[in-house]
Image (cartoon, rainbow, N blue to C red):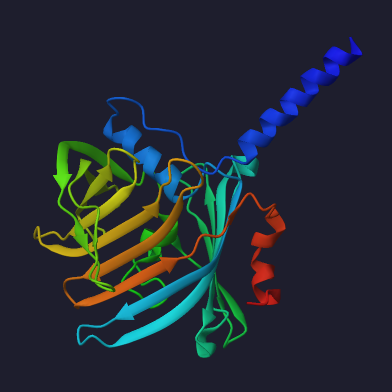
Amino acid sequence: MKKMLFFLMFFLFLGSLGLAMTCRPPDLPPHPTAEQIMQHWFDIKFTRFVNDAVYNGVNLIMIDKSGYKREKKAVRKRIIMHGKNGFDYKDLIAITYPEYSKGLAVLNWAYMDINKQNDIWIWLPSMKKIRKVSQAEGDDSFMGTEFTVEEVTTRRYGYETYELLGEEIFKGYKAHYNKKIYYPNTPCYKIKAVPKKNPWYYTHRIVWIDKNTGIDIYEEYYDKRGRKFKEIFHYFDTPKEGCWWARIWEVYNFRTGHSDTLLIEPGRYNSGLKERHFSPRILERQEW
């Protein structure tokens, strides 16, 4: 009896290891609805298939309409709470370069209840001050880029209504930072996403989801006059064996002619981050 109990506990332990070390999302179900497709994408975006994620190499390339380039570097950490104390995840992003903005950081706590606003803090190292901001400021620029705070950190499944427009071949995306073509002739689900918040900085967006991976590879943003004013592109490494990693996020603003590109180096999953690493006080003490 003791031997049987030992083997039972041993296999349960192995099973828990397998769950903890997952580093790729499950497949989309066959014939998915718009809601299932978007839920799956947000699970990928916020790495809900792991316990935590660390990205130590995030390079930001900012290009204005004249072609002038600036560069910033950052680190990003996220812990998935899996509903503990009502939390979905906690996310921290901090600038590490250039020196004059080093240490600028954004801490975001997201709740399982999407009707409860996220708690968001910004650490301003030049002022030695932490400022708590409202999620209503989600349309603000994210760290001086064409991305908004909502697009990078706070938008989640359920903030919009979704309609499956059909299936279509995505012809490809030419990146602004290197002129390379990504995802040529890719079969996609095409979804219309309308924000529940009204008025908001966009009236709807068209989302192209790769049918094979469930990844949101391209987004088009439209204003109240029906004009496309912004596009966002995502590129992921998705090996058949091994971990999936976000590698490129790029935004282009048709109004300003500016583009911003996040180049993300593969980091670590399931490294044992603790919830205490994501408190507002840690922003003051952290060394970047």
